[in-house]
Length: 388
Image (cartoon, rainbow, N blue to C red):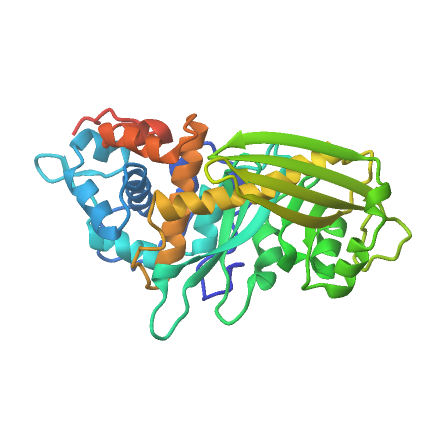
């Protein structure tokens, strides 16, 4: 049983050694094949690579992946690892039904780990969830996926939250396989839990920055009652873009000895955001309180401001999946399909951002101009056709 607790899966979480293999094909080769041995025509890695390349070229469904594979030339199929067969030595791609069968059955936790971005050099990791609304059926709720995303907008991993529970149950399972030493983990108010804070600091040697809201009424009241007007440690930032002008003010206060009910808490922060819509002139104001185990020497107001913005940046990844990949409109519902397709979308976003594309929609359009060569270039796969 792996850490994916929504349903029974095939493997335990891949080890760090496998996750850090430089070649995508080598990482995918460690996933156990859920299909029966008899009748297999294609390796599991080839099927995964086909799906990944098709999604990079703009595919949004099993049917679209199958169409991309059906039109792929022989040199592309060679790069994907399909073997030459028959007297003519021709390669035949996996069908759409084969892709569907694999993505429905394969362990989503293991696949997300293997296709996730590494944590090397990462200052902070944000944790938040998103529902694939189109996966809802008459008898089951929509698949809710909890993700860990770096400050640079790369998805580290993802887990499906078990039905009839919430994100709290998946927090430690999502982050457990990774080395978080010195990394700041941020999360919204739902995850401001004593157990999470204690686990991060004592077991993972990590830091936390957690938002405090009304779901923790006593803690929220205590943080709001702090003498914020007397605070001198402040940071101001101003930014314009996306049709609005925003001013952020961050104040930090050491709270050691004040009895705040959260393990290892050292500092509290008050973040004020003023937004002005440049078109309508409407001004909105938001106040957010947060707490952290980092001291004032470890986390200045400037650092806390940057890390807090990185937490809000996870919404940008979810927005791209909704708008560019039309995730909420997807009707994929069966088995592990919703989670594994979301993993392929995360993987595509990671690859495109690593290639220098800040606008994912523009990156997908560029890939679509050379749909059978550019995806393989991005994944470092060879295009030379072997001798038959």
